[in-house]
Length: 445
Image (cartoon, rainbow, N blue to C red; front, top):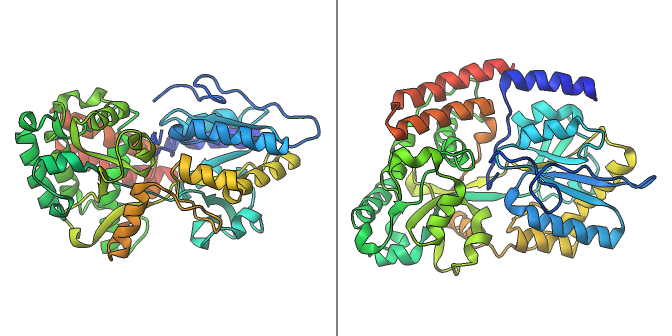
């Protein structure tokens, strides 16, 4: 195991960590991983002699409390000890490497798709024939290396522009008035011009480029130009992105930072919490984020007061739906003891089949899970995603799992931050996006 980790660390030193997330979401800044129910140094699980145990390294900070509660329920029901450690926002890959080097390593962890799997496939137990695989609604949710099933998707999520419907109506508009980028810009510009009259600080919540928030723009927003380029070229990955739709990327980012609650020069220090608080406090009408935010927003807003609209990109707005997909794949540590592997497989399956597990994932975590035993989520954003699809809109697939490295994302993020602050220009963003992609893809070979 140590030999594998030395090789892995060498690879990551060259290519940088590959995992960043939504919902940290968080996901998901720089604090140490959280042990059960707290934030601080990770606490390794204590294994009972002769009995299996589960140690889940959770990716989603916003779901930490729910996982702690669910682990407790499972242990009370089965007697099997379950420890949940939650990595800090943006620190999952680093935390995973650290924890995997310990004698009591995670028995259950996650990767973000094919690029993440490339780092960890030697540690992934083949799930072929397992109960959890047989319960998937489609084999499209299997993450494979050759014939081996190394991971299974456990949540399908959507992101877009969350909208305060009440404030939008106060400004004299309805959701149906926004069907394109041009519509969005016209309305956002008007709200920004009338912000004092309307009692808001800006049309958009702050486009924070702090590490807790920048994933929304260097990853989630950056997915849009990748999606449309892949779609136009009929591909699903590339070693050399062309940047065909970076003008549209610039248009949306410009709108975000211009029609904002704060001066663009302040964005480098604005956090995910800042943006959420601005939206919750009615200081902004629009807020780019995902379905994972529903639980926190539902504490203040009713379902008819908030909605999620597509990130209209000015390419195929008439047919565009929400950005829907997953970068969340559960894996089982093949290096764990046999009894711990067995215990982990049982726990995973219980989470997606039992009444307690499916209810917690649907209602408490707000997840749509791709399993036959899933409970319908009460999440309004999930329902809106389904409504867009039923109306014939095309969901924007999650292609950011093909981004070549975390180092690439950081390069794009730093140039976006400099551009917003006026210390850099858009050409630097284009260079980081296009040339940086080719450089990082070459390093990964």
